[in-house]
Image (tube, rainbow, N blue to C red; front, side, top):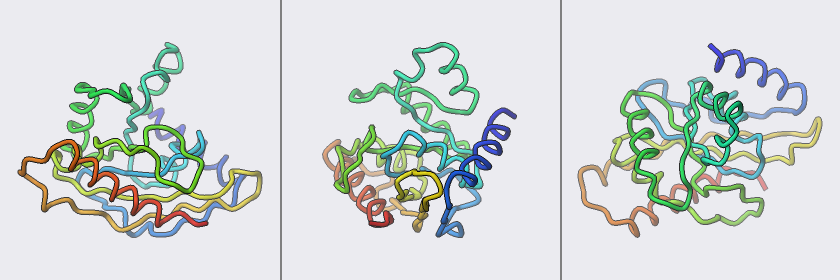
Length: 193
């Protein structure tokens, strides 16, 4: 209920503030679990992804955002859950897998923090691991624009990425890192320069 209300309100605000340009909406799978993977350079990015995807997104968010009881409670009500960045957070991984195996949408920013340059930041291997263990596709999204009033904001949704060739195979952390980096490379291709 709160998710739908917040999504509707923020979508109206975003449309009033910016000239929204969306491409690739037809690429969004309407069934099965998926992992949505986007670049992250502005604090509004998760709201933009949630508002303009026609499916409910469950975001993995840094645990520090949950330190404030009120704000943390609000985040949980809109289906976000905490992750301890820079560590192997087993609880967050189990939650993420439960989401995708329940045919829902998981939202992740694989670089783990905001990256303002055009370069790919430090990509966490978790995105590949979750998609492979959950046996779901990854939906890459590139967001670009400067978030200045009345300026264009581009949301470019790419083709879903299948990692099926890795299912049921033993893959080490280094290999997962390489796969995750390749996913982030696809995201970067969707960003307008």
